[in-house]
Image 1: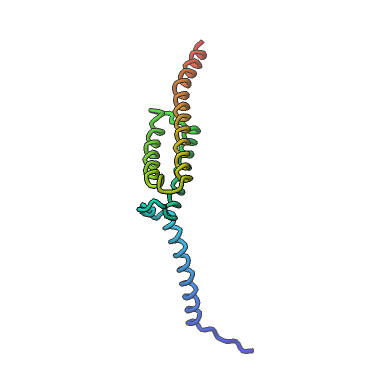
Image 2: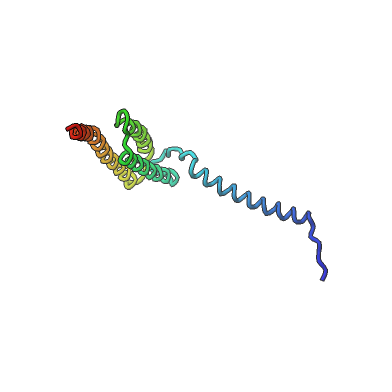
Length: 158
């Protein structure tokens, strides 16, 4: 059997063709993911019937706001602000979160289904419950905690 010599030009063409296909599909997939995650939300619909893209954006925004709320509540419960005004971190975050919620509600409530409207209403209720709990917790830590610290100090001095 005789061995055939493989042409260098043939190898270069095959490798180039393969690399082009791989790069094309990788770019398409990454571009789609990037656009999907970081793209601008669809423009607000003129009709009362919400389009699929806008409904999807509203649902994702709802889930994102819920996750952000629960993350901040967890932070406040586990890592309280020890210096300065104990309410400052919560209040600053809360103002920004309410602005985001207001923007999402303006865009989504009343244009979609009643289920979507109810979901945004439940998110507002969840926020109100968490806000009351955080406020009570911060007051308890500052007022009762200071009293307890003073009592412990007096016991040490006795």
